[in-house]
Length: 266
Image 1: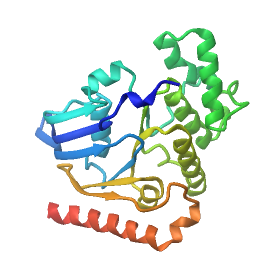
Image 2: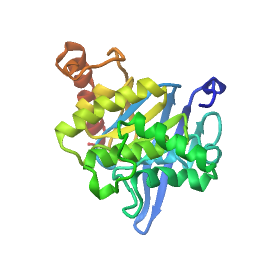
Image 3: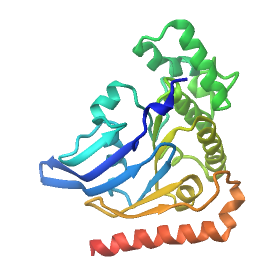
Image 4: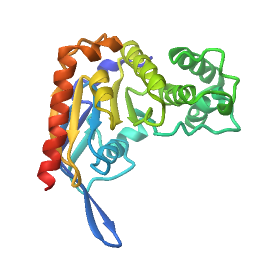
């Protein structure tokens, strides 16, 4: 694994960030005056109503969208530079696995594109399959796995080239509550083992509170940050922590932030 001490400053820093889309019906402001710092090792969840800019901000970090105002740095670089240096892995809402490739083949694909030697590809595929508890499933095809297992394979693919940052766009939104709870637990364990910095988009208040060290509450369009909540919960979190007073208080503050954002819109 690479030396992660090389980045001493903020992992992500946005200052006065704006993004305006030009459409046939005129300009649409997706993000307005977004200011946020994400530090190394943070688990940051973005929560807000549909269309508030959560995914758009994540896509700006990944250089999939380009801001029209303000500044944004990733590991001290522009997002485009960070992309070229493979600073992040991205997990989308759908697993996006190629059905004609095995699970190992899907995980191997970005490593092939990046030119890793075959023996290094084999080692990395083996390591990440173990990391996401999919040992023994590398030879299976996506259609032979459950939805939750497919999402774990998608996470493994994003981890395969050992980027310091993991960006996750509502990866568990389509799963039932039981599977989602289990994957939330597994994601926390994976975060603890790897020390990654994680940006996570969700519509679920309990999920945001359970997973995060920092919760970013966003308003309806134009997307603005209405609150940034630093979690007081311990790093190790059993599921029943959701019944604790501290958890309920944080969830209440998130809910109030969401209400405040809607109030600003009226």
